[in-house]
Image (cartoon, rainbow, N blue to C red; front, side, top):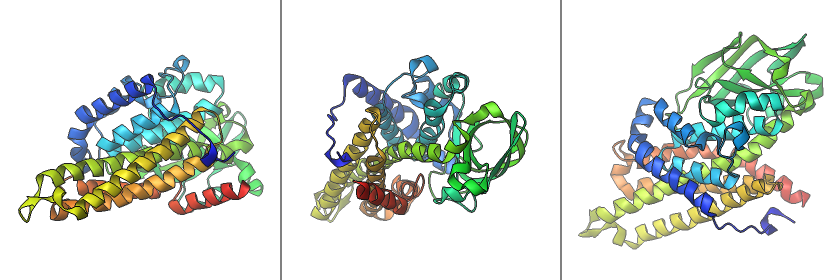
Length: 387
């Protein structure tokens, strides 16, 4: 049965609705009023992340025995949408931390690794990142040049990682390196590397078009000595761990895109209702109504694709196709909604005093990270040909 044919009841449970409401209230009260400041200053106030941790958002589906609230992937998607509706910079810190750092430890870590890292990560006391991309390898992750050499009871890591969200903010990084170039993908291993490891340092911080409040850094490894106990999974499993982690992460980026698109719709609708032109409200013009109607319809469709992918993950089903479809569609919806948002705001949409231009800048990245739209199409094509 294909993902498209798999039936799920997407009616939210009482627990999911409570989680959604808690995330919405927190985002509206604590994050939204500071979103422009976060973008302008390029920094997220630490107290926001601490409170997100205290509310359980930083470890949404981490089991209670490891310090999380033990919710499900659908609840996580709901939280991600709400946070990103308020501020995409804050949202991507959550997405990268939870989907790309917490998730692989939860699914591939030893019991000792889970007990060491998950409680602090789930409570937001520690922040995590995912170090896969390199200066010469992005979409083609198998071409990585970072090396890992066994030396007694340690591994020696050498190389550079690029575009790492939470890079300088993180206390722990999931790092991928090549142990044997002749083995290609089979030679790639994953490691859990603690901040402060000798030889591990943060390079330059990137200046970005959008999501400016989030931390995007270069990570440098120069004879970094990592204990053998820090190996995540088997030596030959690194590439598989990276891809399966990204499959799940794409659900969170789809939810991020839905959140950004919803911000565009809500802000556009509010502006159109109060702005006047030619003696009547802008919202009374059919051209504007049609733009808002398309926006609302496409956002609902993107949200349902995202919820379906999350429900499949919760059910333990293969969600590769569903996640890729959700991310491809939702990111396209976010970019289109942000463009229309600027158009509806008119000249004011081009000014930093209004949120439209920030949404426009923030939306674009959803078509790029955790698999570009072109890569999503390749993934979708591969999956449907399998069927």
